[in-house]
Amino acid sequence: MWRVPADPPADERDAASSSSPSSPETRDRDRGGSLLQSPWLLALAFVVVHARLVHEAISWQNMIYGDVTLYEWWARHGLDNGQWPVLDYDWVYPAGALAPVVAPALVTDDLLGYEILWTAMIVALNAVATVVLVRATPRGALGAWWWLLFLLALGPIFLGRLDGVVAPLILVALVLARRHPCLAVAVATVGAWVKIAPGAVVVAIAATRRDLHDLLRAVVAPGAIVSAVVVGLALVGGAGTRALSVFGEQGSRTLQAESVAGTWFSVARLWDPGVAIEYNDVIFTYEFQGAAANAVADALDWLLPLAVVALAVLTLWAARRRPERAYEILLLSAAVQLVALIVFNKVGSPQFVAWIGPPVAVALATLPAGRALRAWWPPALGMVLVAYATYLVYPVAYGPFLDGAGWMITVEALRNLALVVLMAGGLWRIVRLARSA
Image (cartoon, rainbow, N blue to C red):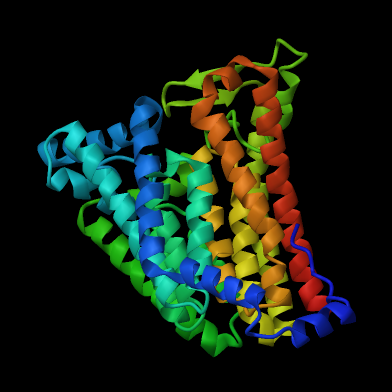
């Protein structure tokens, strides 16, 4: 999907170069392009898309805001009783996630008010990220239009999860990485202390640095400063070793029903009644049980970090071979790593798909027109289809999927296959760039 487009035939190039800028076709294209560049039209589209998503979130209230109910309980329990996640007991999220979780509870005392403020916070963060994308890149409007299409296809799930906080941070960090890597690493590190996924951006930036001095200045220093502040505040609050407890909280989990690695178990339900999905009432999710599922989950605990390291090494090699294409390699690396965090993840929650949109949006907005930009359109289409398939699985037909409906098992399996193809295509594109030096 991450193809290297062929050069156009000579006759097409000659025809393009000889076309008159005053021809009717050219004037029509100019008018259409000017319309899409209109900030007012883009702002209207942003409002319409998010109004649609909020309406859907309300329609699927229990499925979309189930986690938000937990966020409100954690925040309220801390404010009223002084018992805080991380500070007083282990938590499934990094310490920095306390900030967005607690923020709405400081303003309202009831669950409905918390859900409203939470949703407003996610929309506001996405608005800021979209403005940064439009104003700080050469073709920001193009990237923003695609980003809105991607979110519309994904549906409302990101509004009710912490992923709605980190996806805009990933977007901003990738935009900043083009000219301000230090600031990009700081933003991505803040995101990683909310949910680990933005750390992929830090790895991609680190792997594309020119030398050790550049690595220390642009990556190690800002990352260390942000991490020291977050961990320091947690230690002052009495967290102790719980400040890093998130890294051990996922160990006891098995394969989630929608995970990529669980695809075989899901498909096997079509002919094997012994394969079943069970509800884990401790972490409120559906998982595959049994020795085989546990073995796969245990293997993923090792495969995921190994995949991240391998991708970092590949990125380092490609950036050394093609320093003039370092930013495109950075975007490719971030995209592949974020997809890999889903492919090799035993959790595989639907909101994770929100992570993979920012690299494509930024690539469409920043890369020079021509070969590099055209190479991103196939994965851009693929990611929109992945987002829409995710929406069909959750929330539209999650019940039929859990019950073993053949059509939904097929949709989910194709969605997971597409993620693997996107990851493999990104790897091929990085290797292709490096070898074409």
